[in-house]
Amino acid sequence: MSSTSRTATERRLSVARWTDFLSGLQERHPAFWIRLGNLETRMLGEDVAGVPIEKPIWVTGLARSGTTILLELLARHPALVTHRYRDFPPVLTPWLWNWFVDRAATHDEEPAERAHADGILVTPESPEAFEEVIWIAFFRSLHDPRASAELTEETENAGFEDFYRDHMRKLLRLRGGRRYLAKGNYNLTRLRYLLKLFPDARFVVPVREPVAHVASLMRQHARFVEEHRRDRRLQRHMSRSGHFEFGLDRRPVNCGDTAVTERVLELWEQGREVEGWALYWNDVYGHLAASLDAHPALRRATLVVSYEALCADPGPVMQAVLDHCELPREGPDLVALARDVIRPPSPPRLALDGAAVAHIRAVTGDVMAALARAAA
Image 1 (spheres, one colour):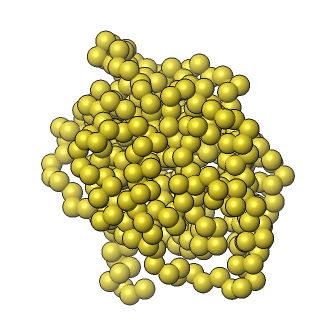
Image 2 (cartoon, rainbow, N blue to C red):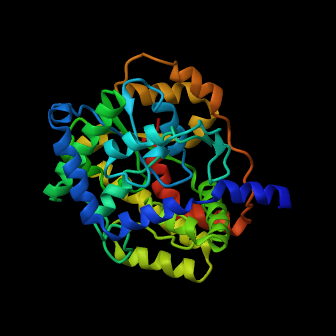
């Protein structure tokens, strides 16, 4: 990398000191921020209490599977509201923080490529996955690989459920939309719980062919390890915003089989990245496939999207997403926009040898075949 491009990268991946400080307060004192969020709700009173929550939409899947571009496109629908980059750090108090940001902002920021260096340009108004901050505040062991992160229809957490619904209402009221939209990579282990809370929910799950997916995951992990070593504030920022997919604080989500998760960690610690990622891919998407097979209501609520089909012919796949989510035609033509902005991925910068490809396919083949049969 040239010195010029390195300077640009450092500027793109920098984390402001005030952001690091404020996110640290939220991480260390979640109970205080929960109380503050509840106080904000009481202050707003009837302004938000009567806001209906109808057919919320979640986009979920492993990182590097197309979740971001689907979020970007869906967020342009005028009926939908979602979190934005401007909402972090104090995600738990959206109304108060946005009131402050609206008055403190002094200039518009130019779009910049996001930290993943994947060509997606963002501003403070761009949609982003921040609701994980709320989950972490209430479920403290969700990102402990030794504990199952699976939440089902048997899960009970009244404090979280009230707070979560109120938070959604506040965003709907704040941004003038009718339906809530969120991206959350870790929600794959919570679909049954979310469906219990919101029986009319819609889930969109992109699935990527595992060989290309593993290569992309490995490349991003190596990139973020390098950047975290350069700047530990970036590592803290990712962890505090609920992103443990890559870097020095990488953590696999425990889908219910602790032995598998421990084996993934062991393989990663040994530097056997291909084997670790292949096993992890199979565990995560195998959990999805089993859940869809066992729960017809969840299957009806979930659209599995082929990443390859989305890239090859975006229009029909985007139309299938809109139909599944029951989104009316209004605002920009999202089907035409998908055709304009989605392109087939570039050849992988990290080439896997034949043995690695054969191993990934052997580990993931059955699960990939099952999901391919269900994909749009």
